[in-house]
Image (cartoon, rainbow, N blue to C red; front, side, top):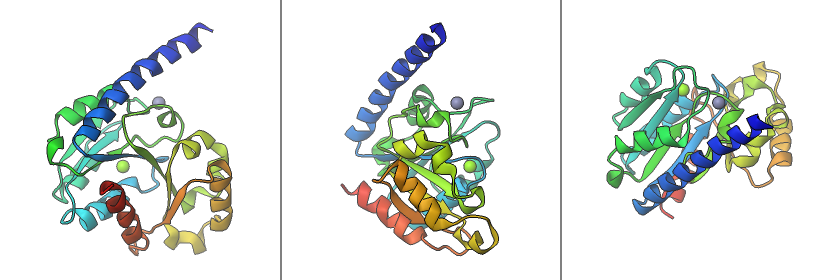
Length: 216
Ligand code: MG
Ligand code: ZN
C-alpha cells in the first residue's frame, strides 16, 4: 500500500508542474505534442521528415528524450531547428520537471510548434503528463498488429496513431487492417496516419494535421 501512495504523490507533483508547462505553452501559442513509441519504431526519422516539410512554413522546436547519448538531437539539429536534448541516464520516461527545464532553454515566444520526442517505451510515458496538448503514438509494422491490445493505456491516452514503415508490409507479419481494428477498439477517437520514411508516403498528410492544429 505504501508503494502506491508514494507513486501517487510523485504523479500528483508531476501533474502540477505539467499544468504549469501547459499554461506557459498556451500563453505563448505553442502547439505541443508528445511523440511516444517503443524503441526503434522510427520516431526520430519521422521527425526529420516532419522538420524538413514544415521548417519553411512554421517555427518548430524539438525536445529530444533519450536514455543515453545526444545522437538523436544531433540528427534533428542538422535540419536547422532549435533542439534541446534530455539524457535521462537510465530513466525510462520523461517527466514534467525535465520538460520545464528544457522549455527554459528554448525561445518559446518564437515557436509555433514544440515536439517532445519521449524515451522509447510504451509503458510509463502513458502516465506522465508533460504539459503537452496531445500524445501521438507511433507503431511500426515490424512490431506486429497486437501492440494496442498489449499496451492499451498508451493508445487510450493518445489522440493520433502513426503506423510507420508501411513499405515493409509485404515482408512482415502484420495485418494492417487488424492493427487499425485493435487500435480503434481501445480508442475509437484515434486519428490514424500511415507513413514510410523510406518512400515518404503519408508524411504530407501528417504534416497537414500539424499545421491544422497549430493554426487553431
Ligand atoms: Mg529517437
Ligand atoms: Zn518510466
